[in-house]
Length: 581
Ligand code: M6R
Image (tube, rainbow, N blue to C red; front, side, top):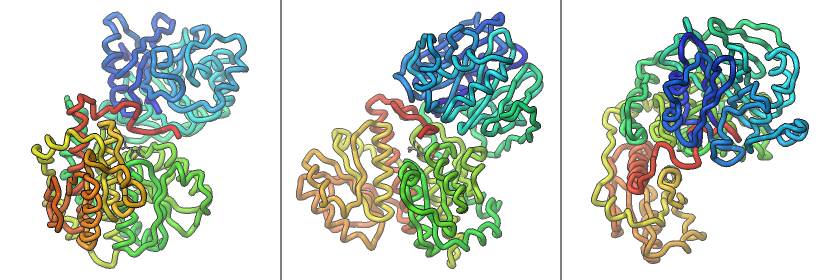
């Protein structure tokens, strides 16, 4: 995973690189580091932990106008200073920061006979390969890149050279330019507040950043012209306020996100009638996504089936990618991804495209790798989501796919959708219930139909930020095995928002109670069974209830994490954007 950020210009660039890295921390925050060119020599500063720790290590004397930096999510080798980037070559002449995975690094290591390695990373091989090549710096970089298999976005420093060399394959890399400064980064969010223009580097292209210009090269070393893109400074551009808990902020923002989404689709018509007519022609839809986005895809499929009468399938990207299914050219493949940078999802989209099928991407980040592969784009308008646990991006995806289903349906749902966004609010999770349920560490989430999806998402939130080993399960599946785990120390969170399923859910509750399990029921209606705890949901139309109910489960997870003193925004072992498979 990891994020890279580099800057060259007039004056000290360290501050801008650190600022950029902070904005890329969503890609990993195990350790970080920078390399600077000082009196033509390369120096590195590294630290385990977040960029704040690295910042503490940078002292007043550290000053350079050529700086590359990295924030790491460990793939090869444990989290420690030695494994953190930048990695120097054996002779200290080359420093590299890298996002991606060098798949043949063991093999390449054997070829680098006599070189002493100081880390367990795949990246250190790359800096040494470059240093061992001959020719100009660009030629060295080109020949080393040819030997490398896998994915990379890199920024490289050579001693004695006031330049930053960049290259990429499969991992994203952007370059931005303004008077007196040029930056490169894994994501435009690293510098979008300062620049008006940027370039998107394509696979196997190279860039040389010097103090006053940037040059681009193709894989054969010939110079190329690249199209300049303008940043879309959106009206809802949210910078990084001094927020202590982004997850709390992002949960609270959900009503505004839905209002914005409704405005974008119904007033600004971000997706044209012509596109909708094209989409309507497809009868089969196959959704592919990972994690939370997979859960929203499950709901998207449900909505398209229910309202637009389409035939839908849903797959987890990492399974779809290696599965034996045939790609159907008449089917529309829908890839759902907040970041648009998730490696497995991207790989599936490329595969589908190569086989001649059409691709629809539901993404929250306009300039992302996934959108480059899209025939159709359905943007979501969550705004920046910083916390690793997805909250507002999830409801934005769910609501956007509900809008899509509405636009493709015979029945006009627009007025119902607009009315919902005007009345939807985040209600706080009842404190008195929280106090009582904190003692449970064995928790199941159950539901049927759309509530099953909410139970999966509720369980994922609690796992990822509160580290509680819980599961979400279809209520009807309980008695096929999992019920064996239920005892009087178990809390079962039951989501019941489908009237047609009320009796079935009541039976499930009885089965749990008979084994001593305690129930926390989330519902907008009464049930003929006593439960220990109940949260009364607002009674919206059934299709909106996943949005209403998940807000409580997000708050539940947040409360558990905070009670344990965990940082909900940066859970251990995870990163926001999973850019490796
Ligand atoms: O950026 P994406 O939506 O493609 O990310 C997919 C998952 O990695 C992501 O949803 C993950 O499961 C969330 N962090 C969970 O809260």
